Every structure is written in structure tokens, then in C-alpha cells.
Image 1: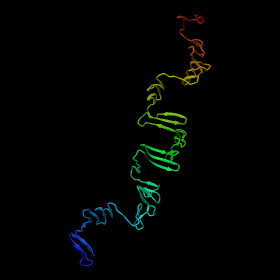
Image 2 (image 1 turned 180 degrees about the vertical axis):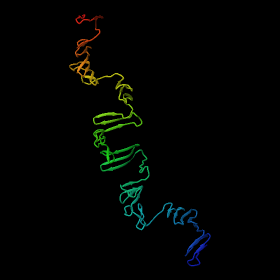
Image 3 (image 1 turned 45 degrees about the vertical axis):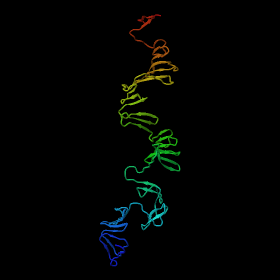
Image 4 (image 1 turned 30 degrees about the vertical axis):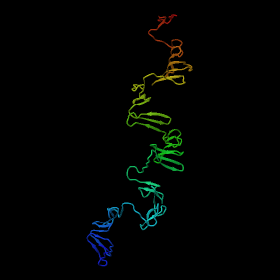
Length: 402
């Protein structure tokens, strides 16, 4: 069809049942019914069963209208009222760099500057700002703090990532400068100000690190490198290995220091990675042995000393009193450099041995001979020798050899 084609009846239809090629103009006062495609030199309109497609010659579909009303630009399967694949440009005469697109009361799209009352958001580089109330909500439409992130899925809610070995979040007030994050590939919490660092639970401070480095548990004013306080006067430190029956509890209780083992295993002490002392579950103490058979079982030498005191004793207790076995140093008056056995029940020295002479005293603390007995002696035989020759004593008035 060349030239101008008019319908033969004013306002009537023009019906083309096949393909038509138009080299000029087509004026239709009614409607144009196509049963195939309407072709132009560089364009064609293709009427299909469920859509109308406008094609550019040698390129393909440019505009698609589905029979449901969805319009696609750059796509033949629009899934919304207007579906654009590619960039689009919207001008209303007020557009400009840095403006945001909002809608007025009638739903018309208008461009507004970021500080305008009609819009909440602006994109400035990669930052997002709420310019009305100053609050940003991610996952929520009612943010409480300035930045409110809400997530309904388990896992990380906020992720801060740095391509180097150090990345921190800085929280600052006029009096405090806090950093949280990673420093040199290590977890990092630091108060950069000259103030304390506090850690708490249930709304209460549980641990305080002062600006001087003192650590307080249960107290906000520690007075030492580690200061532990409990309101019930029982501050405990418990060290336990759940995989072993040899776990032990270490307790600080006022001025008392005790070591407890609540399990069935023994409690042992070691130095240089070698066991030195053991307490069995039955209470036997072994020094130098791992299998003590008595309340105190010492395998090796034992030395008693009492500092600058004059006496060093071992007490043997019984229901009727105690016995003391010990030594004394010079300056004790009654005893001087002696070994003794003392009876607490009667308050008497039963036996003494002088260091300087080796004299033994029974019933006396000042023996003047090798054996001095203050009391009677009962014996089957007493042998006295001089130069290897014995002299037997049988009578009370017998004169000893001289």
C-alpha cells in the first residue's frame, strides 16, 4: 500500500487480514485491526495471541504489551505494570544531581532536594541517610535508636569487614573513646580514654578494669592487680577440668587459703613438672611417694627447724596428753643444745641428751656423766669395764675400780 489509505466510511474500520507494508502515512479515524504484522522499513508491530510486540529491524523486541496490561521495555515477559530492563530517565523539569524521587499527595513522582520535606532518603555515594528524624531502620519501619537493625533469621545481623588485619568499630562520647574489633588478627576491646572499662550482666557491673590496669571482680574500685570481692565474704576461684577426676577448687575465703578437691581423685602438688606431695582421698599425705600408707608418709630425709626460736618439737597426741620430741638451741636457760623427750601430761623432761658431751640424762636435764639417772634403776646385770676388764657389781657397798 503506497500513499495515503483512508477508510471508505468516515469513522469506520480498516481491516488488514494479511501482512501489509506501508511506505507513506496511514490515517485511521476508527480502529485498525491486524491479523498479522504491520511493517515499516525499520520497524514492525506484531500482534500475537497474548501480546503486542514492537520490534526494531535487525535488533528485536523493544516494547511488549501483554494482554493483562503489563508493559515491558527491554523484556518480552514483564511481570509488573512497568518492567524496564536497562537504565531509564525520568524528567519533570525539576530534576538535578543529588536529588531524590518522591511522590506527592496525588501519587505523582517528583524530584526533591535531600533537605526537602517531601523525602526521607538520599543516596550520596554509598551512604544512606534519614534526613527527617535522624533514624535509620534496616529490617524495621520503626527504628528506635539512630541505627536499628532487625533480623528474623539466625546468623550474623551486622557484618563489618576490612581487607587488612585490623578493623574496628569506634564508639565515642565526650568522655570516652571505645574500640571494638580486630587488631593484628586478634580480637580487640579497648578504652582509649583515661577511664575505666566495665563488663556487666543483668544490668550490673561484674568486672572492672581501671585505667591503671587493676582488675576487679565484684568491685568497681580494685586496689590490686586482681581484686575479688563477694558480698557474702566468700570470694571463690574455682579451677576444674571436666574431663578428669583430678580437678581441684582453689578458694580464697577471707584470710583463709584452702585448696579443695571435691572429686574422688587425689590432690597432688608438683614442681618442675614432677609430683612432690600427694593427698589421697582417704586423707593420707605422702611426700616423696605417690602411695602413702599413713597419715604422713615421708620417703627421704626430714628436717625440723623453727627459725630463730629455741625449740623445735614433734608432738605426739593421745587422749591423755601429748609427748614432745625435739631439740633446743643455746639461750633457753634450762636446756642448752639438747635433744629431749618431754611429757606434757606431767610437765617433765623424761630424757635429755647433751650435744656437747653426749651425756644422757633420765629424770634430769643436767647429766654430769655418760648416763645420769635421777631415780632407781632396775637391771638384771650392770657391766662396768676399765681398760677392757669387766667389774661386776653385786652388793650396794661395793667399791668400783678406779
